[in-house]
Structures are given as structure tokens and as C-alpha cells.
Length: 476
Image 1 (tube, rainbow, N blue to C red):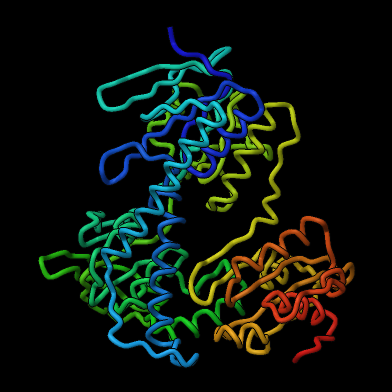
Image 2: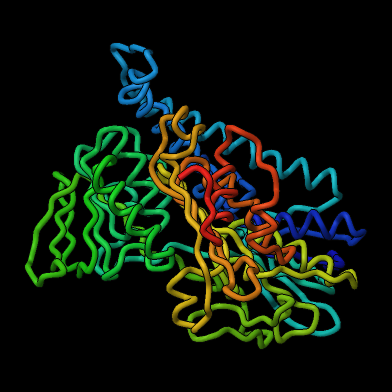
């Protein structure tokens, strides 16, 4: 007889494992099904984020930034270093150790919260008063039954037509995080979050990096002023070669590397040779093999699971969260939707406000934002006021030696309610939290302007930007 559960979660990424833990905390008999295997062929919880995404990429970013500081910035602090070298295998080993620690930690959290873990590919078999699910792990096939199902199958890297990923010469995010020596020439297709972060890592370690972006604008989802500042810094101090409006043609591999033919924005045909090519052109929902057709689960034209505002699908007692549904493909959004889904099952008021999800790009300087951009407010015909403060005028930023960028706050012209906050600068990923809290509580720019911020801190830039909304900044 098939094992029976109150809640079955398909996928153990940030959304799935969090949903399973919360369901366990709420007293449900819960199982989490996942088929991820690490490089050693062993089951590894945590999905893309913990295994080959958020966590390992930040580990390599930190390593490369430390190297950059030693070689190029320590001298300004009176610290002289000689004979500095890069041990890439050691960097990768450190990254792998961090990943192993966190993926193993999820197993402990499951045990703590009485969540069962089953390894294999989960899919629907049939629907009724309970849902029958199949878990396939190689030749082994198990079936379980669950009253409630949470789909958290995440996303997979989009492939570049004519350039299949082999993770030897043509790399996706998995391969880009496992390079064992610094490539002399690195090509990156896609100037989004993954492309910029991976390009930054290997440029700091010594690669000649060229980024080819199909879209005519750089970072179109980011506030235009922030995007322009980022383009200036990345092409300048960081020396990333970023080309937008590019059309990729033939991609050929050989023992010497990768040859890419492309047409630039002026219509000229160009040929570039790289030692390795990273393809980072976005991600698509992972619904293949889910068995949606067997139970009538509705998917949209792009393969996303259709859900309502509470992440409920068209099927009774079936929820979907994270990258596999509408909204930003962000780990923290997935986690909160997982919590909300579990709490909704328990009859509580689970909810996630998609309008206040923070976004972060972990480049140097970092980019972070929440809410509306200026271009969105203009397009929507919303009247607003803007306040801005440059980090070059921040005492703490000066002390850090990280003065590029600025803080910007957008507030409604009549009500003064904060509509968006945009940051490019040091530790933007940490500072954006204040803006998220403020917007969730419906704060005005005047509220932030009246809050005392410690001195000297980077967060004072938030205070000054709020003052700037009414043209009364104090330190510029």
C-alpha cells in the first residue's frame, strides 16, 4: 500500500524545502521529493540555488573581490602585498564546502521538523480525493498518496539555439561555477544577473571578458539611471566589455575554444574567439515530466503553472510556488510563497506581496531595488518626486573606499508614500531591507527622513535620499 501524507512537496529548492519545513511545523505529515544529485552522484537538497546558483556564486564573488582588494585596493590603505596569486581550485573547493554544509543542513532541518525526504523525480499519476504521485529514482519506482501537493520544481537554464551546453567549452551556470583555471578569454551571452555576476568573477581573476546581450538596452528592468551608472562602472573600472543589441549567429567549438559570429547593433558582422563561453540567457519553468496532463493541471503558453493570488492551481488542494509560477525568479520570493502555501493549507492567511519583493545583483558595486522604477511611473502616468544621494558624499563609503553609485528614493507627489527605492553601491543588498520594510508598512519619505540613522553608516544615504524627496538633503 502506498505511503500516505498530508502534504507532498515536489522539489527541494528554497521554495520547496521551506514549504516542507513550515508544513511540518504546522503538524502535517509531510514529504519532500527531489531528484538533484551533486557532482559525486549523491542526492543533494537545496535545488539550483544552494547547489549551483545563489550560494556558490556568492562564494566565488567574495573570493574574487578579496583578490581584487589585495591587488588593486589595499595599497590605498597603506597595506603592501607582494607575490599575490590565485589558486582557483582552492576557491572552488571552498565554494563546494559551503554548498555541502548548507545542503546537508537541510537534511537536518527535515529531521528536526519530522519531514520525510524521498529522492527521485516526482510526478502526478492520478487525482481524486487524494493525489497519487510517482517517485522515480533510476530503476526504482515508488508511489505515495497525498491530500495536498505543493509544486516547487523551479526552473532550468534556457539553451542558446545552435550552441548546446557541454559544460566543457559552452557553459551554463553549473559549468561557470566549476571552472578550475582562469580562462584567458571568456565570452558571456546575456547581460542579466547571472551573466554579470559570472563575468565579474572571472574578470577580477584575470580573464578578458566580453558580454554579448541581445536586448538593445542594458538591464532594462532596472531603473534607467541606475543602469546607466552600472554600465559606466562595469565598462570602466571593472573593464567588462559589454555589447548590447547583438544578434548571435554561428557558434562553433574546437580544441582551441569557441568561435562566435555575431552581428552588432550597427549591423556589422563580428567574429570573436573565446576559451570558454558562458550562456546566461535566462531560465524557463521546469514543468517537464510533471504529469500535468494526467491530472488536468493548467499550464500557460510559456510552461508556467497557472495560479491565483494565493498560489492555488486549478486543481483542488494543489499549489505551485517559486520559479514555476508568475513573478520574479528569486529564491526569497520562492521561500515566502512556500511558507504562504503551507499556512494557507492550514487555514491561515498566507500571503506574499509581489510588489515589495527586493531584487539584487551581486556585482561590485551591488545593485538592489524594490518597487517601481522611474520609467514605470512615467509610463503609468503617476506623479512622483525623487530624492538622491551619492555614495561619494558618504563618510562610511569613503572609509571603505567604495564610493561609486548612489541611493534614490521615489515617492508619490501628493501622498508622499514611497513607491520605489533604487541603490547602486556598496552593500546595497543589505540596505534594501529598510526600504522593503518601509514600503510594507506604507511609509512616506518623510517617515524615513525623520528616523535617526547611525553615523557613520552607509544607511545614512537612505536618510539623505528621503530628505532629497523634498529638496532638503543636508550633506550635498
